[in-house]
Image 1 (cartoon, rainbow, N blue to C red):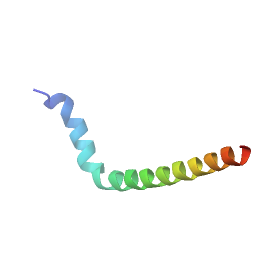
Image 2: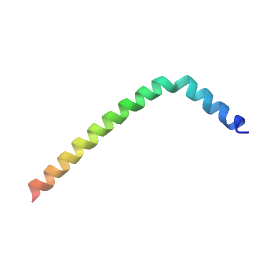
Image 3: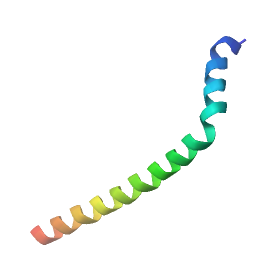
Image 4: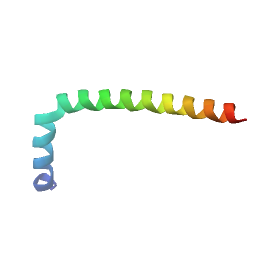
Length: 50
């Protein structure tokens, strides 16, 4: 049924699953930390202004 549209995706996921997953997790953690830091600095600036 969906084999024609699935084969390249499956091939890609099979070939790149582990490193991409690791990289994605690393990116997620880094972006999360950056978001936290930016939020803290933003709140600190608001508090300092007030």
